[in-house]
Image (cartoon, rainbow, N blue to C red):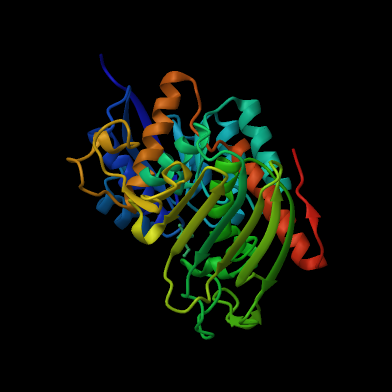
Length: 383
Ligand code: SOE
């Protein structure tokens, strides 16, 4: 049977534009579905740069105004890879034009904006998803399966860290390609929205709602040159953010994110401790899931390190790749996410996180920033 076309129009072409496009190109080879992904068009303001990107990555044509892109009849899905301050406007226009939407994380600048986006996609009944890609690392997905099977028993603790060091240099400007992450107006927040958002997304997926939080933030470099104004301006983002919290299931949360952990480039680690089992995962060793099973108590007590590379359905996604023992990487978490999205289109069971799922992370982020500002515990909001 002929495949249906899934014609993508992407807005933006930075690091995430490459990661998503790579996934679109790979998915049909490894995860056959009812759909053929077509790289229809990419949009960005600089005509020359966007054309060069389109030629390199195989997009059929380009636009310099995303408004034209979302109105095009030959496009089925809009992929939003822009700075965070544009997510809502583009998503609302895409929903009004009946497009499926795949939006880079975090969903929005804050929960109020995120809620409008949720309402728009739900009213328009368009398929939607947010690129919280770490859910689709096979070892992380396996951890979720073990949790859902009830193997951990009562959960006591959840802890996660996302550590980087690339903004320590005080002469790094704010604003512009990649560095918009340092500009509050474009990013909405600092490491909390950029890095902690990943940790929160996985945590809520694994362990349910967070109820209350108590946070601390710091901005170590207080002024930076702004690339748009050419002036030295106050830095409004959080450079580091740490918080404690309580999940609705009674377990305790402990999170840290920073771009000032000298030596760490992208160290995302998570650990969950239950009465019967503990799980630990580390992005730098992404194929391994460390498991402590209390059933082994006695002579063979100890942590085991499972290399999640069996090409059997026991190891999520891995039956579609190579032979047992051979690894896949960070990039394939995006491929898995597109594969799940397309499967969701076929089955009518949407792939997570939908905009509504990702809104929960926004509520936590709002509470975290509010708590840091007020220097007190804050209850996490709900839709
Ligand atoms: C920031 O450096 C960044 O690229 C984030 O924006 C991504 O979401 C994260 O996965 C890696 O780090």
